[in-house]
Image 1 (cartoon, one colour):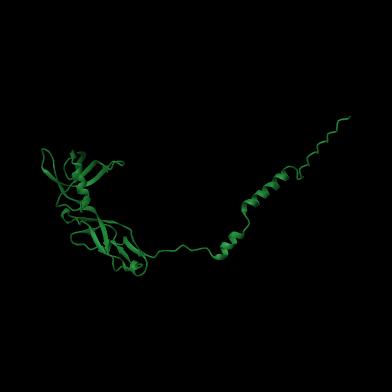
Image 2 (cartoon, helix red, strand yellow):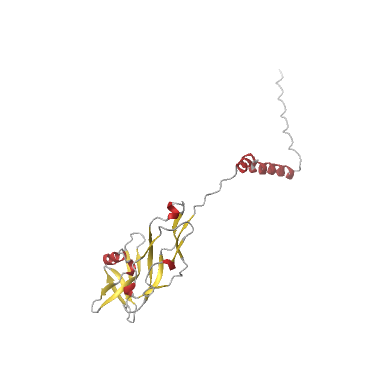
Length: 215
């Protein structure tokens, strides 16, 4: 059991404890955090709720705390719905492009009973330069209102850019160019010589030869 809080609606917040395994099973389901379930509170009526937020231990990954939000089945609400694509784009298969997923979920407004599990889109016909936008998603406009900007790009097929190789002339010039450190080192010596008076250092005095012992 892990601590949790149930809030929302016109009722006061309630602190309670929930089964961690049950919450994990809900989050791993197809509807994920948009799953609507019933919370049975001791000495109270059963209430519809959704998982609003949760905290996990960064090391063990175990659940630490859960926020549950009360749901009124006759009140529209805002939720985020995942976007999944399927099929191999023609721009990848025939033109050698790359398929990129830019945005993986969109925000919608609807009644709890009309919340989509996901948006699935076939991208088989997408060519290089084609884009999948939020406004292209298939859903019932009468029941679901799209809150994400319809022009938001969700996925596209782009060309793989190749890195330009240096020209042969430039490579040869780089190899034959004088080494910069040597020039700096030489200049440094000249500067040191000028600092000492601009003359060459005097030659070392010759040591006097030892005279042989007189017999």
